[in-house]
Length: 228
Image (cartoon, rainbow, N blue to C red; front, side):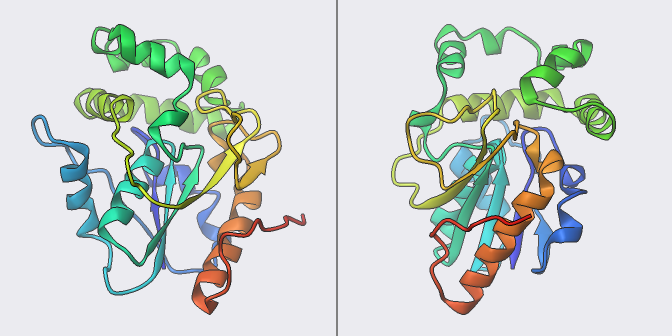
């Protein structure tokens, strides 16, 4: 079984290119409306109720969804976290996001401001023209400001102590979480932050092999060669 968690403000639409390529049973976990001043662990505990605790599974999170996947795996010992365009711990936050956290500017700028400058977001998130850009603008238009502000705050102040082992899939051109000195399990050449759409084929090969390895009890942590 494979559970998919979309990125901040996104939904199952970001998996439209990936879903037809996956061979395992799949469930996309929806974002819940955060409660007033809700902590990330409490929020994730509510999402975890949607995940079967009796069966091994992969929890695949994109961007902020990767953070949620790691937190969820604390509560589901049989689950394995797979991060796409995300980071394995708070120490991997890039300098740009650390500066935003330190300055507190994210509290002053309304999240919906990005809706007015979609081309800037297109560059930052590595969104290509055509279908990707149309979907990106749809997602921006549907962003809920209260949830978005809450999620940004929880990402910037994430306590990643003892989150456990995970597998990371990262694009070489990701501007949000650029590859750093720490080793990455799977680097997707040319992949940006929106590679869940643009590089769905490469990602599907990795996920299918990981799911197969989990089902057969073989090593799911060894890098999987990609042949296209």
